[in-house]
Length: 535
Image 1 (cartoon, rainbow, N blue to C red):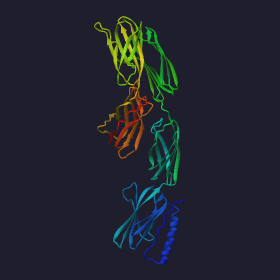
Image 2: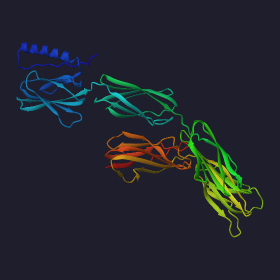
Image 3: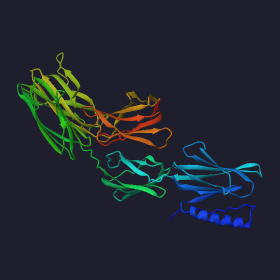
């Protein structure tokens, strides 16, 4: 059904009845024709009425009619101003009866209409204002729909980035569909064309999500289906089994077998011996095994470190001390208390399994790093215990010892400390300039590289990508939402540097980071906003 135009009357105070009748007939005919194209409106002041369509299209003739309500109106002008302009760009005079003009718009938009007329009776200028919406003749085309984050997990806040190509001044967006379980989403908003961000409620069920997206302007529309997969949260670390000896005789080959498992899928492994990489590479599947031969090694202790990551970035670490010598000492390692708490203090002790042994050197290791050592002196043997500041996560406690009869030995044990703390923020930099909270950071327009450095004693989850949010000052809720990729990962997986690149224009911005997780699923606390000046 075509929109309708409201009726208006044309008459003068000093005309004949026949002329008035003719004008009325003519006016009815014009309105009948006009009502076939668009809805109309009538605005007025005490001297004249103005009739025009509220809605029209580019390259379409529209009529604007001025009806004087009393004699003596002259110098009638119709002026137009586009919503992008601050001044009236066009002024069209109406010099003769009937007081009407035909206008064709070449550019879509919302136009302010102003009609002026001079009353020679009152010696005063009178003005009537109105608004016309001019639509493009092409529908608002959906050019791109992008999901942020690209691979959402259960509970993630998901945002749709919609790019619509259109010259229309107003675009209506409708989103409809099921987002998990029995939860339905029905959203509608009105925005300009271009880039539009739309947040969705967190999806609490894994599986496929199908949403119907429609864009419309007046009676033109475009539509598409948005389909994405919500992944279950995988916080299970891979399992590493290493089959190796703790003691190797002199001149024997050091070798071992590694077997790795994951509940979903493995991704990467690295084997280091004495700090040097001997094996590394991409892997796949739920299990992987490898036999590795190191060869002959000199007398003393040697370090074996293994790192394995799964597809979700969950990392597992294995560290072991290997002793090459003749006859080995026999002892065990004990850690107390039995129930360890992060932030507390524990005792690591060497427990002898032989009698009448005098220890001349003892070295204590946590996760392959020496935390203390003791050497016998002045008739006293080496100290058989040390204190350890407990950190969350799984740790390998290793003790190496030597005796006065020229023997050496090594023993180790595993401890697991519950992780209840989120990652710790270390720094946020842009173009290698560290951003501070107490003062703004200044950079030049152009490419910008943001780097986030975080630490967690239980390990950072590199499979869950942090999000860098950039809000331009003049916008209340518009964010540039960027996923940050891991750039540097420490050998123990506890310190990670994430980075992302973008282009920054002149202006000032508020920058923050969210969605940084450790391997236990704890989130980093809110770090607040950093102020960035681009000038």
